[in-house]
Image (cartoon, rainbow, N blue to C red; front, side):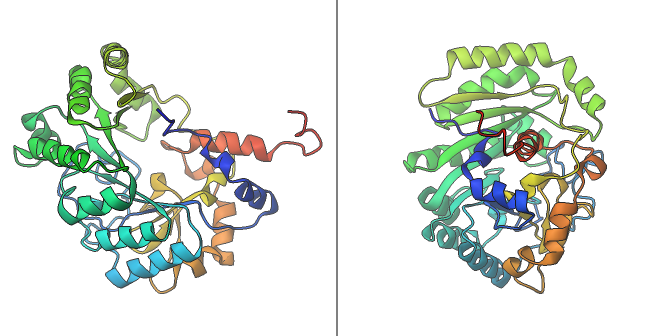
Length: 355
């Protein structure tokens, strides 16, 4: 099975690394779009709604990208030759009604398309659009049956069974779009890790990615929360990998203590030019970990085109001026990538050829 997750994907884009050396701005490789802030679930660990987490400080739950603005953004991404677009929250992206047409337009232009979703609306035209044009869809999950799902998300009972039906139907389409699950581990579900992996394999998903819930901005609070359940979780992950993994199903272990993802030792964030975020408020943000925060806001595109803003001096100054050591003392999914990028950028050119 090919590798789907890696901190080294940026190495494929030498032009971006050269632009960073020269202080230039190039089009992002990947754009994450948050089309709508409304969500039909209320997950207890949601970074946009939990009081103890970084995200959502300035999020308006009523924000949604207007249809005409979304198609303008779509045309800009095509013109800029962006390689990939992921739809995510904010809210639940598959509740955004124009999304099937947007996915088709991007996909027909050769842009890779994906979505993070709770899976409740992965059906009908929405499922058809991603089955035809999508590269991957990843469903967030935190439960193992109808009762636990309803409790974790504040929804009616029976929705877990409906989600499994949606995923089975998506698999039955025989699409090339990879269907994965991100299983978020906490104290309530820690005894059910092996059970859910076996169930998801039976459903037919491609892989399950196992990660710990981030419960606070404080590193030590997160580690203390998970430390007492780690032996139980680790034993189940090892058993799932031994018993269930094969050429059609992978168990990806991303469950670990957060030992280096908070404090940052570097003063620039080179990954900003590889991935950027457009919010439902029509603002551009530095990354998904700083969406809807003042420190992460690069600028607004409500009254101007995305491509005009992206190549502006205003944006260049923000991209090169953001200091992670000062404003990013929180969990960061791009930390490992930035460590590698900063090492590459610091290489002495006279010595770099001595590989």
